[in-house]
Image (cartoon, rainbow, N blue to C red):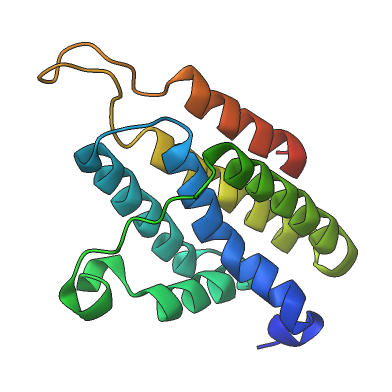
Length: 166
């Protein structure tokens, strides 16, 4: 494919690593219980895998690379087991780092990618964040009440959209 040779190994690493980093940040934007976090991870991994069906060559290639590294949600992921839940040691610093890497990816794509591929990649990341933050309610009791998207989750999603100019 033509997509990979356009980028250095470091640049490709940024593009391939960012979707899972967005998943982690979106999941950690609001502290949830393990069941809710698992639902968010499943939604995020599904959104990443769905990128393999994108009309964009860049998104398809990145998604395929992520799935090859992490496993396919439809196949039960790594060895038939659920994916491990990854958390940042410092939640605020981790989320801020993801925002900075998203900004760097946006600048990289503006310099090297076709406009349609850059737009598709940015939109895919926002779709991924949306899927994660809306995967499970927070603050409900026995399924009653709670918020589907909390202010903290909305703030992460909005900040990501702002740096990606989506």
